[in-house]
Amino acid sequence: MLSLLTATAMSAAEVARELDITHANASYHLRQLLAAGQVVVAEEVEIRGGRARRYRYDPSRAHDRLERTPWDRETRRTTYAALTEELGRRATLAAGPPARQSLTDAELWIDAQTWARLCDRMTDLMGELHRAAVARGTTGAIHTSTTAAMFVMAEQ
Image 1: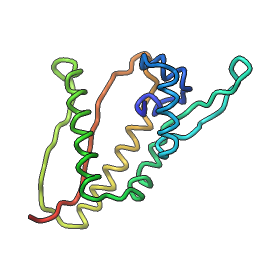
Image 2 (image 1 turned 60 degrees about the horizontal axis):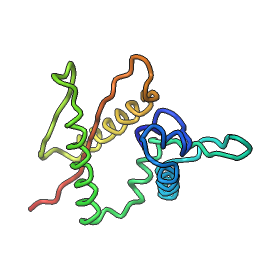
Image 3 (image 1 turned 135 degrees about the vertical axis):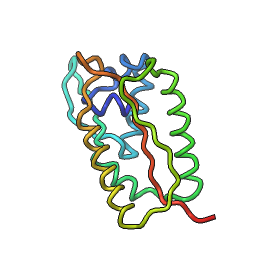
C-alpha cells in the first residue's frame, strides 16, 4: 500500500482495486496506517453523495517517525526480519538479467564523521527516490525495488 501511495493519493476503493482485496480490508489497513502516522489524508472528495478520503504516503516524515520509535532490541529484530521477508518476496519478482542494479552488504568500522555524512547522503538519496515515484501503470515506468538499512552496531 505504501508503495502505491508514494506516487499518488488513492482512496480505499482505488487501493482495493489495485491490490485485488476487499474495500473493507483496504479501508481497515489505511486507517491503521493513518493512526500510525505512515500516511496522511491528502484530500477528501465527494463520490456518489458521500465523502471519500484519499491517502498518500509522505516519505519526508519517515525520519521523524524513526526518531520517535523506541528502537529496543526486539523492535529492531522484528523490523529487519520483516524487511528480509519482503526482500525475499521481491527477489522472486526480479525480471531476468538486470540492465542496472546495485547490491551492497557491508559490516565495517568507520569514523563517526564519515558515518554521519553517509547517513545524511542516504537519507537524501531515498528522498529523491520517493519524489521520483510515478503512479503504477504510468507509460515508460519500470517496477523497481530498493531496500536500505544503515545502523551502528554494538561491539561483541
